[in-house]
Image (cartoon, rainbow over all chains, first blue to last red; front, side, top):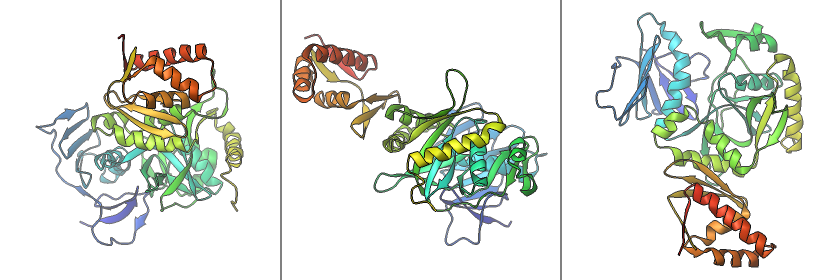
Length: 310
Length: 88
């Protein structure tokens, strides 16, 4: 069966499963990092050393069950076998492959992954982290409307450069948004493929994607403005900054299970070293979004991120 | 009273502060510049009195304030399982 090659979070992926929303790379130069295929996936791993309600780990094997959708078997961070449930349209597994499954694959590869969106500002990355529904995609999309290229939508792979500087790898995909957000941002005419019927999220074009990894200029942990937290942007202490990075690990429970505390500690302290980890507290109402964006841009001027920008 | 480090800690220098992680529990602790200096001083078991003497040489602080704050800091480190204090 035909496969396509994509670039995602710094990895080349050849996939039999169509991945709408990902930037398609022309052709593979040499072997790819990850292969995704349809195939048979067992219901359980008999010798699993660790198990959770929907997953099991046996050495290099990671079995993930998403009830009503599919089962996935990940092998050593190099391959993914996907068996959709009988009634499940084959194309609909893509959203899970690009979310949870990719996050686990990156964990298997010993990579640090944060639950965050990121945009590029003046050649550097600005990250927004928060729980699902905290407004990560909304912030990135609103900034995309203003011309800031998207670096990552939902998961940010972070590595340390030779000089210890933390860098973010583009997830190579287009933004995933709640329908309500799209209407508010007036992107509706540009909306394209619906991501998943039940979730009412859509893929949309955005202000161009960034492919090269970027150094991190700032990390904002999103939270809603309500007592005792007033709207605004506050710098965190070094310890709070490091803890915020660690707390926003993608599927944090797996970090513990897969013994990756040390990698996260190295990245969390490297990010904290930049001194640019902030609380971004804002009202969740969409009507307030332009004000939040204006505040954010003013903050970028204050931290000299916009200096020399054209 | 002899102060000694306890447990397995990873540490990272961030400016003049230190962030440490317990390898066993995974929790983080932050030490400010003075705390970081104390942590350095107890890299081998050291009497509390000697810690205070060294800090008085290096920082602009009154002896009684120094003694009180060192005691409070050590209590905190002890509560987090980072040190052990021998009553010897």
